[in-house]
Image (cartoon, rainbow, N blue to C red; front, top):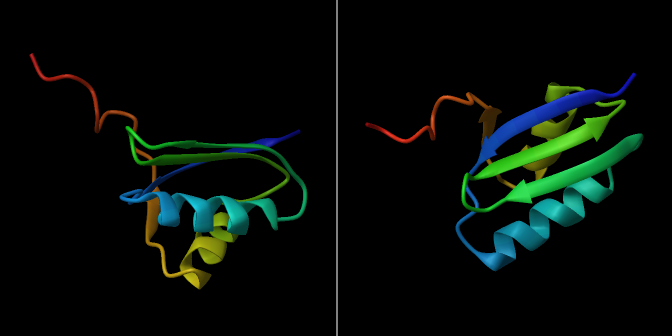
Amino acid sequence: MANVVELKVNLHCEECIRKILKAIKKIEDIETYNVDTQLNKVRVTGNVTTEEVVKVLQKIRKTASPWDGDENLPLN
């Protein structure tokens, strides 16, 4: 069964996004990946753990933290 890893990552420029995508594509056993620039969210599914994805992002000097879905809800 595939794991879903959702992380908050600072996606402030096209170069950062390109580096993140390149790094994620190298992870073994991933099925899908998605980068949401509006939410600063990276989502990876497959036979992968949160720690594995965070490590890969740290290698390219990106800070990642577990996604908290309530962060970007609209305020009333």
